Amino acid sequence: MPLTTTRITPDWPCQVKTPGSYDWERSAAKWLRDLIPARYASYPALIRHPVLLARHAQIQVQQEIRVARTALQTARAELPMLGLPESVIEHTIKMYAAEVLQLQHIARSVRAVSEALAGRGTSR
Image 1 (cartoon, rainbow, N blue to C red):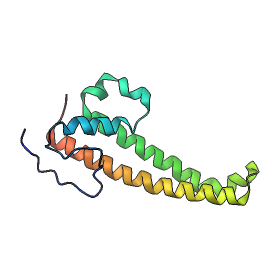
Image 2 (tube, rainbow, N blue to C red):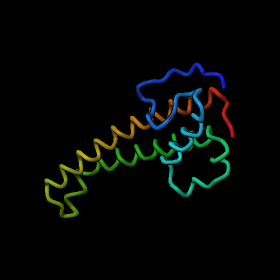
Image 3 (spheres, rainbow, N blue to C red):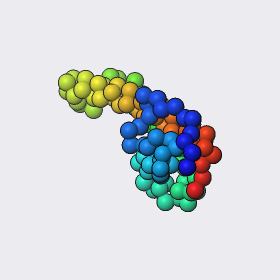
Image 4 (cartoon, one colour):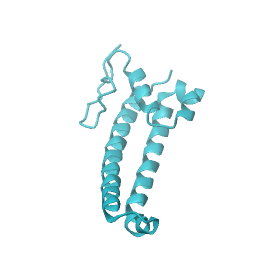
């Protein structure tokens, strides 16, 4: 199998083999499946077409970023109404902020894998 010209970036997930290496598409598909709700894992189109799976993972992660941002932006106003102590609210705000950063990193990783898969015109 010839190697691709895809350049590995710092955002490349360590769980995914280098493009062009043996079985790299399978490792990419496995990693991408872990990012989407389990109920999608059995859909034949997503199983057979890693590029489609990557697209769905991109949409899923972007939606999760929106949710985490909304939770972060509304936490200070809404959490006190739940009767939570200030220390819990502050911890929750830090948690949401960290989650947004983590999800942004995952989104960059999904984009890198998606581009590599699309560059190969991969389908199973």
